[in-house]
Length: 290
Length: 265
Image 1: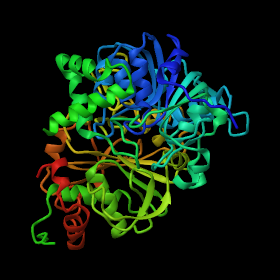
Image 2: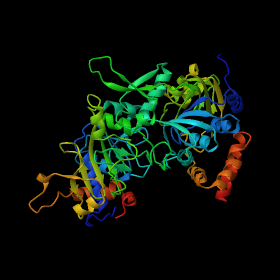
Image 3: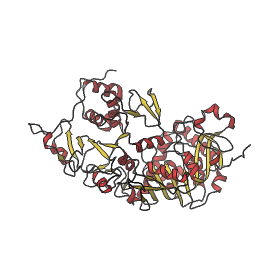
């Protein structure tokens, strides 16, 4: 029997340090490991470099002053095209950024996963991506074509967070929704990977949930597992739940209203645990329906 | 279904047909329009003159058949699985034509969706580079600009998300070999780059639009192909939807009238 990798959110955050580079799986406002992100917000860790196809993870980390630098292909809430807290951080100049073509971002992850220094791509040639990121270099093909290409560097991730629909105690993860996104690459790229899941199940039950090709996260690449039902809230996590659009709209509106933001922060972020967060959300939902 | 197809085509319906026309020759290509008007256009092209287009549901699958925009639960026939990773693979294979927005575009087809006021500390952060840098160097790209003004058709874009012909000339061969900006469709007309120096040219004006109106709303000189001008000295007019196309737009592809929200008539 392989070892039990279950941890609490607090134990996971306890392994992180200020100044680290953290990769976060999911895509926009889809299947984000939000309970881990919120646990990070509760800690005194700061000066982070965050690497993500960004959504409310980057938005919340910016709004709470945790981010030194954001590396991203985009930062979006999907039904709200631009993450409003991220917008504010950009326009106030509060954060450093490495803004990349979405496909080039994928290659940064892939290079890290494969322990390559870079992967070549044409993405970025001719656009301002190169001028925006003067640290990017080009490379000349050693073959007869002699083509000049962008050398997309590997992301050096100290840790990664991902959220899966199902997992076992040994760190195998299962996605049951429409897209794995790049979560397997985040897990491979990072020195330590922590996985939250809607539900921990016995390994032998995986195939009652979905076919083998939904088992895309291997325990080879996972260091800690935490069960967090509704752990992606307010992002979507199908088929377990859809996005909480009303909650997301409320969250988005706090970007332009300091009082509303302080209220949001007090009510939903300054809570002791994921369980307390879910209680606060349930109370809020009852309120708006009542 | 009681859509009135006797009612004359609106401006936005002309724009939809212009979007559809951008995909006319894209056989076995991933047709990837972004935004309601381009999506209705892409679906219209496939339902009529470009049946071999391949169409994404914009989530994770390719879908066959005709179905309405803005109705997530509409029944769909899934024909292939394309998670985002596969979409990037298709981008890099070149078998895709994207029709996306442009907050700013210039005479060489440089597009900005990233930021207004530079990127260091933008006055207004827009969407970001998104996939534009990779799209432009890999496969054909067209643009949809619903508000044609001197603020969108600009002398110089604040940030180059998708590079145009001058930038790709600087990059040179062989890296520019897959670069192609096909069409720019606005609420006033259709534009292309079929000029000797690849400057933007008026391809057609939408019915009711004058050359003066376009010039007043464009911050650079638009090329005009003199040979395309007829004996009445008029520029070509964007074609009107056929009856079949109007029926498809109004009854099948956009029964809830999302097109009118993107471009009020």
